[in-house]
Length: 244
Image (cartoon, rainbow, N blue to C red; front, top):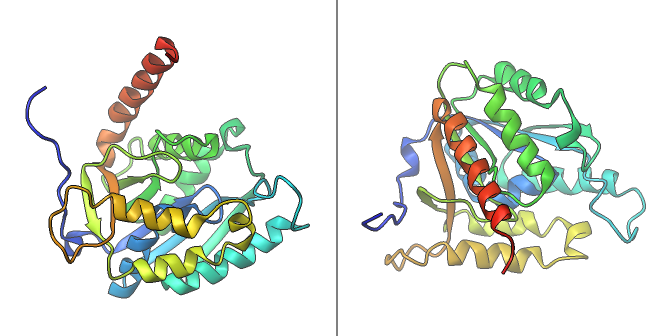
């Protein structure tokens, strides 16, 4: 393989204006693509956020009692700060998405109901099983569907980026929204880590005004299936090689 493959910093204005975001848990959309969600909202785009699970697994030490209820409040406050008005949750049990035979059907129903031109969904390279499950479900849901654009985002594992977007202007809103996740910040410095990820993504950008970036794998929907299959093959090869 020869030549560099630095992902380009693209003009956001070329993106479609009807957007659907899939979030496995009630914070993933903010952590993974909150800067772009805020940008779409400021442009006046039609945007809907769909959370899949109740997030009840996000309190392993039982610090908050009914954490699912608390997380519903947190995500409502966070999305309001980003400008999102249209959001809902399927309230599926946290940690079970990979076990559900109906997940692709639910994803397809959401897509057919909202009719997006751009879908944001976690990458199949994610570490969390729920994240990988909805990534695979969207691949299946879009099989045979009229073409649209898909952006895979990362939350707990980096994407293989082929596009970057400048989120410097919306980063304050993303961080303010992240700070609403009190139940999760009790376990993890999300604000500090979201800041670090956004800053680190600018490593090969030499424009001093670009302070924060979000990175994505951007694909046409008809390319999802072969790319997802290649990702799965790569993961099997890595796992088969074993740890050093």
